[in-house]
Image (cartoon, rainbow, N blue to C red; front, side, top):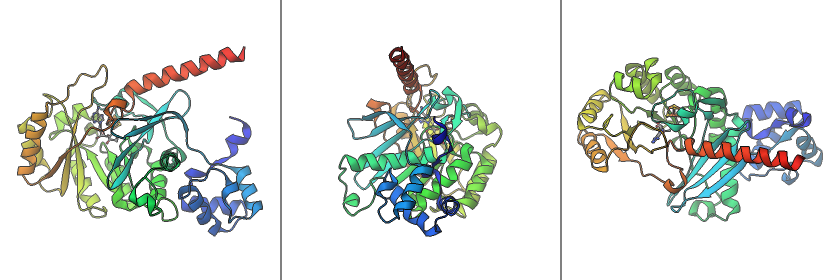
Length: 378
Ligand code: SAH
Ligand code: SF4
């Protein structure tokens, strides 16, 4: 990175107050920030030269002081079912992914918040890879910016796009990493997702998934209460301690109490409990009864996730019949319970697959690029 680039501000990472402050320091009027925000996040321009309602001098100052870019795309793959996955280079041999899931009435983007993850859940390939680093706000927002831009450039057809809205209507923080372990960079990104001068999504259309960092759930409730999904995966502490080790620090009673507090401010009147179905581990009807009893006082919905395998993992996916029996117990006890469709299977874009094999390929890819660069340098 050149010295000039190192001191340039990545503009996609500034939420409204930060962009106003930055403009003030540049000697510009604060309302310019709102104008620029719309160019960046609604028209997806990557060069101030296109910001035609700014004075030429302002455009030049912007160009000299700021960068507008998503992380570089290493790979862009589309699955047979239309699911599309971008692999982004975030430096030092690390890569993160975003997955676009098209549906008739919405376009959802699943984004990453960290390169790797420190929380080490037993069944998760991101956890297996360990923690590399937090993504910056610009890298988090850049995923959404890039996806919208790429889909528009490809001429995506959807009724809401024809009405002038962006292709991505829903964002879920369910990619790589634990978003609440990167709170300081994630919250400004959430604010941009909601900001009417940026992406303008409603709080109900932005979902943060967490393995249960209780103090951060409380902070999020005050700062930016978007829809909340909790990775529960077990109905008792000993089992959850094993599957989701952060449970040893914030056990179920504390986590569920935090869910109830969150519901006071949440945009939806329920939390979503995600529950990964692991053959012979947490998937019997007894487990389902235990789970139903545990959450009986919490307005919630369940999303059962068939476990997605990755090489070297010591789990198996529950058989379909067992998943349906589990679902039936929860439904009979009055809980809305869906079974997640696995999308993008043929490109390893399913939940929890966003590292493992990909990371290996990434490393290989980057090694190859480094080798190629070394060869051409001679
Ligand atoms: N760190 C956050 C968000 C990212 S993981 C969290 O844990 O909630 C998003 C979801 O995918 C979580 O519910 C997680 O438990 C689940 N998941 C992880 N690995 C998986 C796998 N191999 N198969 C299916 N779901 C998985
Ligand atoms: Fe981290 Fe979530 Fe994977 Fe657990 S499931 S290791 S919290 S990304």
